Amino acid sequence: MVVQVLDAAVRKATKSNRNHSWILVGCWQLENLLITDVVDHSLISEICNDADSALEFLETFFPEGFELVGTFNSCKEDETVINFLKSKTNGYVVTDFDGDCDSAIKCLTIDGSEETNVSVDVISSQAALKCIAEHCLIFCANEHFFSTIDTSDLNAIADTSLDQLKLQKNKLESDNIGLHFPSTDGFVFGEKHNDISILKFLQVNEKERTKDLQKTSYYSMRQFFGADVRVDVRTFENATKKVAKCTAPFVKHSENASYREVACDILGIAFVNKNATVFQTKIAIRRSIMRNIANTCGMLRYQLRSLENNDSVTLNDMKSSIFCLPDGVCVLNFCQPTILTDERYKSFREQLHKLFLINADRPTFTILNAVGLQDKSQVLLNTHIGLKPAVMDGGEVSTVYGIYGYHHYMQDRIDDNGWGCAYRSCQTIISWFRYQGYTDVPVPSHREIQAALVAVGDKEKRFIGSRQWIGSIEINNVLSHLLEVTSKIMFVSRGSELASKGRELALHFKSQGTPVMIGGGVLAHTILGVCFSEVTGDTKFLILDPHYTGDEDLKIIQSKGWCGWKGSKFWDQNAYYNLCLPQRPVAY
Image: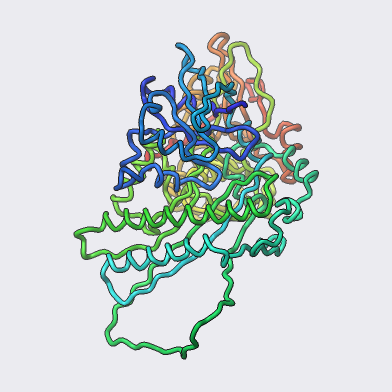
C-alpha cells in the first residue's frame, strides 16, 4: 500500500513546531489513500460547544468521501482522537517526521490492532487533482427545507427547525427516499439497479471520459463543481403510504399570531469512486445529505448561542456553501447564516482560519468566496497551467495566486482589435479579485471601464463609447473606483531595463499574487509570473497576451505563445513601460 500526501499538507505541518499535534484529512475513494490537509488538534474544540463530540462535528464540514483519517506527530498519544479513529471502517494512519528532515515523513497504517509500515509518496496539488478527477465522480444534492412557527421566541424557532432537519435525516435512513439524476432522467428507488455500475447507470462513456480528462489542465477543486463536471441529484419521497384512518383537512386561524419562517438550504456533496455500484453511490449520497444536515443543526445551535441575551435580532436563514482551501486539495462544505454582517460571524471564520492554518489576510470562508454551482465560465481560466516550465540557470518561478479569467480581443461580441488590450487586461485583473472572493462586482465592459474613468475625473464625458487607448495609470484608477483596491505603479524608462525588475516582481507574486498589467508603446499585456535567477540576474516573464482574437482553445493559446514564457527581448527595448501592481486587501 502507498499513502499519497499532498506537498502543501507537508509544508503546513512542518511550518509550525515539530512537536505540534495535527489530525489528517484524507480521501479513501482513490487507488491509494490521499492525505489532503492537516487540522490543528488543539483548536478543534473551539468550533463545537461539546468537546466530546468536536471530532464528529468537525467531520460534518467535509464532503462525503473526505474524512479524518489519522494523526501526525504527537497527536497519536491523544486517547480521544485514537478512540475516534478506531471507529473508522478503513482503519487509520499514523505519520511522523522521518529523522531530521522536515520534508520527509514516515507512515504506518492501523487496521484494528495490526500495524503495517507503508511507503509515502508526496505529490503536488496538480497531480492530486488529476488523481481525483480520474477516480471519482462528484455528486451534488441540493435540498430546501422550511420551518414555520407562530412565535417569535428564538429557542422555539430553533427547536422547530432542528426537529424538521432531524425528521428529514431519519427519512434518509429509511427506504422511503429515492434519488433522481436529472442529467439522464434516471431514478433510483428501493433495490432496483443496486448492482449496476454507476457509470453504466449514468450512461457515461468511459473512453470519452478518459479522453476529456487527458485534455484538462487541473488547478483547483473548483473545477469539479462546474455544471459540465458534477452530477446533480434530487431526492424524492414515496408518497404512497398506508393510512390507518382517513381524516378531513382543516384550517386553523389565529388572531394576531406572529409567524416566523426559517429556511435551510442543504447541500450534500459526495466524492464516489467511479467503479462503485448504484447501491454504493446511493449510500454515499444519502450520507452526504445527512452529514450536511448534522452540520446545519450544529451551526443553528452556534447561531442561537451567539444571539443569547439579544432580543432585538431574529434567527437568520441558513445556507450551505462549498469552500476550497488555498494551496491544497481540500474542500469544506458547511452551513452559515445568509446574513453575515455581524462581527460574531467574523470570529467564527477566524477560528476556521486558525484551525486550518490559513493566513488571516484573505477571505477564504466568506460567502463571496463560496464555489457557485454555476454554468461553465465563458472564458478560459488559468491558461498558464500545463505550460512547460521556464528553464534558467538558478531560476526560481513565482506566479499568480489562485484563479483568473483570460480576457482577450473580440470577446463579448465586441470588436476591440487594435485598441482594447488594456481594457482586457483590466478585465483579467478584476476577474482575479472576483474569483478570490474580494468582490462581487461584475467584470466590467469597455464602456463601464470608461464610465469609471469619467466618474473619477480622469477623462471627459465624451470618452465614453470611444475607442481610445488606456494604460496602467487608468487601470489603477479603475481598480480604485470599482473595487477600492490600491496599486503600486512601477516606471521603467526603457524596455531593456525590465529584466532588472525580476526580483521586485518575484516579491510581488509571492506576497500579493495578483496579475500585473504592463503598458508600453502601443501595447498592453498581463504578467502572470516571473522566473528570476539570483545567480545570473536574468528574468523570464510569464505573459498573458490580450491581443489574441481566436476561439477559446487552450491548445492553440499555449502552443502559439499567447500565454507563455518570454525572455527580456520580448519587450520593445527603447519604449518606456508602466506596470500596475494591484495590492491584495487584508480581509477575511
